[in-house]
Image (cartoon, rainbow, N blue to C red; front, side, top):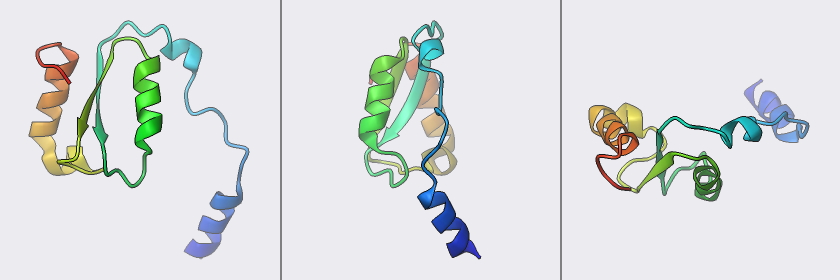
Amino acid sequence: EMKAAADILAAFDDWPELYDKDVLSRNKVPVACAVYYNDMFVNTRFTRETIDFVPNMQGWYTSEYEHCGLRTGGEKVFSRLIDLARGEIER
């Protein structure tokens, strides 16, 4: 059953836009995100493009964690992102 569901999802190509680029291009709120070099689910290139496109967005590039970094690194990852968003540290 899982294989059938995965095949259906893989074949589907009419996905809606994931986010509204017009709205994001006007962002005024400081934002920080973790970018995991070895992320098996999110292509780093797409993350970089989003960071470059969204005003006030900072990325923390790391190979110390993977996709589940917030879960496994918890307080350390979250604290770093908060500090980055506040401008207290640089990427």
